[in-house]
Amino acid sequence: MNAREFLEQPRRLKEQLEKADMEVDYLKSLAERVTVPFGPESQPVTHTTNVSAMQDAAIKLSEAREKAARIREEYCETVWDVGLLIQRIQNETVRDFMAARYLDFKTHAQIAAPKHYSRSWCRKTQGRGLVAVQALLDEEKAKV
Image (tube, rainbow, N blue to C red; front, side, top):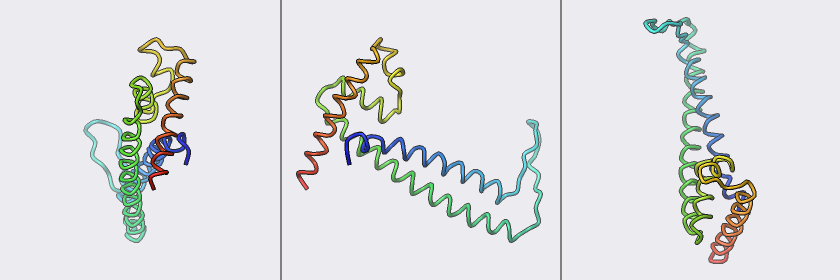
């Protein structure tokens, strides 16, 4: 795995987790068969008597919750691993940039704006960071 693939894992898992959470919410609404009417004082109204469909939805909901929990656990472990590797980068500026980019999921513009950095500075700093991360990954691979 190269440096960019390694560093992009948290973003990919976060996207998967968001999709899994949306699926859980959708299946939860199916399992409960609840429609929330408009208005702040309204009470949920149930609309189903089909027990079999509710059981199927409840099973799917349980499976979706388990899937989301697995993704959440993998996400936390991956963020931890990426964070530990980024902390090993010697150059503090590069280290901070890489953390903002790959752990806080900030764009170049979001990183550059507060410090008045240019886009080319961001590209160069990211390049230096990727080289540093690749060297650390290669070092870890050589130990194994």
